[in-house]
Length: 493
Image (cartoon, rainbow, N blue to C red):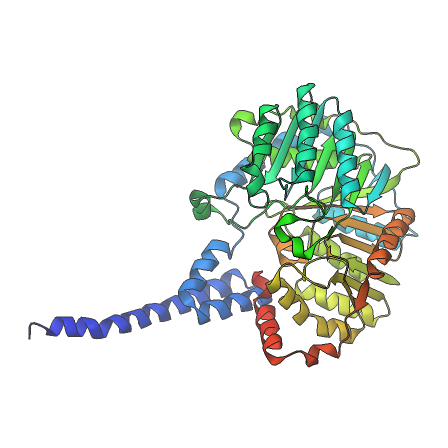
């Protein structure tokens, strides 16, 4: 009889675990259905996960399932915006650009972007498009060498390679002659560089180098760890700016050299948009820089008037993030797709968008728009590649042309619509860029720039081959099963 309690306990433990597992499943189903009701595809992905592996699913959901930015960070961000949004500062803004009524795509797209994103359309820009990684970095270094007041750089990835060291040396030289140099790097994307000797040498020379969105145990309890600052911005003296897809890295990209070269696109900007880029940098810097080094002359740097050229083009900065204008990218992309009438060309390395974007692309092709999507033939993310391939069939059947680039990893994120609008941005056409990353880009309402960007896209297409719809069914069963599973889980990617 003395052994009876142990026997009962031995029998009851599996039953208790089964009961706990059942309760976790039910509670997680309720949580997902309530909190993700407005996004059925995302809810479906989480439901599959929490029903299949309830304990792991519950842990992942509360770790990365919701866009938790952190209460203190939200409060700090609100104070920063209050500080920046002052009437006296707006007196330095140049007049809005008047887009003719006869240009429906630019006019309507500018209206959408102004309501959901960061900037407003302004005239007076001179732009230079860079399609070569070395040339874009050389151009940034040249501006750093000419700097007399400040250099503000914000990048997702900065590698300690030849490119990273060259730019670091240029900033160190600038700091030595009295230029205020501030560098903000994503804590995950640039984690190795942030611990490098090059970073220490830059700081010793007077360059301030800070980590954006640091990762630690305490932060994991308060906010999501996978909210990343994916922007690529450089502002020199408040007069010249750069943005696009280029990280500070050699085109050979040592961490993933087998996919190299990385093919990127950057824009050099002179004009009112430079102040918008400056404002984005200032907000992010104040949000993440250590308090002891956060003293930045906000009012002075934001009051600098960038050159405005009488013969310049109309452009508009777009910025999005989990703390501000969260759904700007997806709304702007869908507006472009919806407004296009003749031709729409998109390039992206990672294509796992939401259902609305997929539907709009298919509908655009069916109503006669020549829709072309250019993606890498080999992707550095196996899971994303599987999910992306699973989404192809309905697009191909609708008449969308999907072209696979064979000249390396096509990392440029560009859009050209009807030869009237050109977009260069840091955002991929995936849910991470749509909802989790801090992103930045430039909308350009000018046929000349759109023509130049379209020529760059054609150079990508010249090194691409079409993806035939028949090849989908010819793949092995296990590959199609993996693609199907990745597709179901794609809302979680």
